[in-house]
Amino acid sequence: MCASETFPDGLPPGVPKYGSQRIRTRISAITPNSGPITKGPEREALEIWRSILSLYTRLNLTFGTDKLPALAGIVKHMQPLLGSAYHIGIWKDSATLLLGWYCVSGNQRRILPRPVEYRAPTWSWASTDNPITFWLPFPRSETVFDLKVLEFKATKIGNYPTMYGDSGYLLVEGPLNLVRVVERSVTFCGKEFTLFKEDAYAPCLDEYTELPVDLYCLPLHHTIIPKNRYPGEYDDFMSSSVQDGSTYVISFLLLKPRADRLGSYTRCGVWRSADTEKLLCVQNGHDALCEEFIGLERGHRIKIF
Image (cartoon, rainbow, N blue to C red; front, side, top):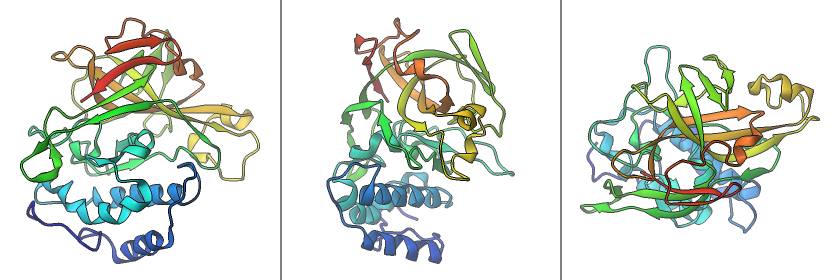
């Protein structure tokens, strides 16, 4: 595939025909309205977009740099539904949900490291050659957005409107907290969460390379798992706290400070956890380097590259 190819019908080659027809049908059936993104047409459009990315990132493109240009057709179809602000694979109006992507691996492969050649900021799924997918943050309860995206900044490279340089970043606001990640466990304020590979709450790293033990977590969104839920709902959580009563389930970004840009960070992965409501406020991140500290509730303003 060459970098100049796009797909006017909105789907790249290799997507199963039954899947592509279903996606086209769902897109044509949706009409936009002004309701919240976790309900109605916007929610369905978001689920379609995430399904497309899960299929698309499983394809073996000849050139990884084609990832973003090749989606131009489908972006055009989705713009009336998800808003016109689209940067580096992320829709701005839905950024807090879409930043929660994570890499998956099959039985015959490991998570690949990010390409040596710069392709996209670490917060974009286009920065990795791994298949990606998403956690569903809102089965039937309302999602509370904890991360505030203040600014997208991206610099074009050449004539390709979706390719950007290292100056691309997100300016965000939220409570940073220091956590210790060792293999499949996370320690916070002396409390260790022992996690296993099949555990729904295990941290998902973007690449299996040497990382600092101390990372920062930044909440994306949280949802309340109700005590009275439908049979089969939330079974993937496998948590006694969910079975015994209502609880918070929180999705976090895992971030690493940049040595060359004080107050800036790069993404290392994501983490989903229960019984960590304290992390919705600043607990042990008072000394975290940032653009601005706004208090214990609102937290920090930082740039993510």
